[in-house]
Image 1: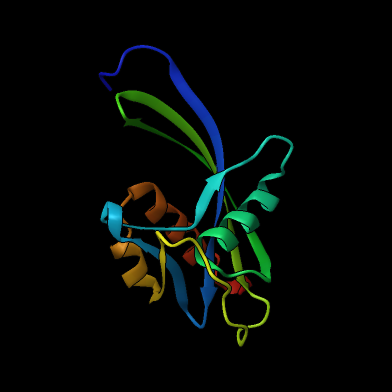
Image 2: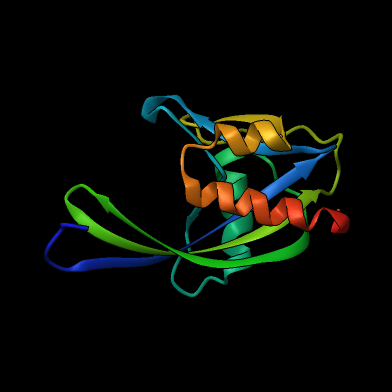
Length: 142
């Protein structure tokens, strides 16, 4: 990586949410992205609490059931001329009430439910494809 200067670091948490063999992905038209729900862990907030909050805020889906901890990975990337090291923590989840309609999520995201392989292929970032791969390998807990 050719970026010089200080490195920004932060922790993010998110989830691979699965329902009827489909994975929740978020289309973000303004950025031309397909991604999983995740976001910053706020000061004093646990990673699971942050993951649940971020999924609800971005997608509108709450009432989730934790099925497995998918672990952590560090993603190293450049953004706006800066080097970023993001420690990501993800969880495998399902809907507590599959019949519940989602609340309104963030306008910038359009939630989609895609079959495993389509979700994996559609994701913009390889780091997020790794989360779907890990979740798929743990399907027996669903």
